Length: 203
Image (tube, rainbow, N blue to C red; front, side, top):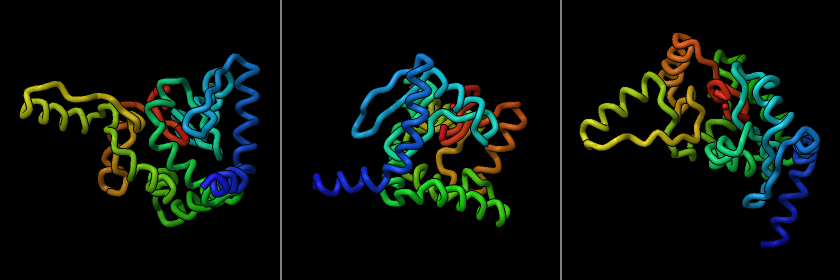
């Protein structure tokens, strides 16, 4: 088992090295790092700036996985997106140095087929499939929770791992489109690897 873990770290090392560049920049700008369940988590400083301002997702990202490095806007976002980002860690272990090119190619393929580069990306669909915690309230989920709260006569849980403007189950195109319309109507924007509102927040 130990040999397999070592091989997994080595196979994902090229992608991890990209993440370590961000870790270094974060530490030099006042950011913080911690070792959590076999993954180096970094937040704050230039890491937060990068996720908020420099991702391709409108609005920025709450978190982003690069091999065995997970970048987060802050500690809260790292905690909330941990289940989702750990799926990306396992993907990086499977794909190794091909992880980033494969992710990008999947996004391009989705765009060519008239789908969204993020929510319809197979890598993201896999991550959201195991991300069981509910999203923070959007116009749609707020109505559902209000109905559930009335039936159960207790407050609904507003804890979230998924971004506030992200559907918990993006496998449904209709649901994703409805959520996108709700975001646009409300003037809210999503984030990167794991999108957020104002970070909202990523990948």
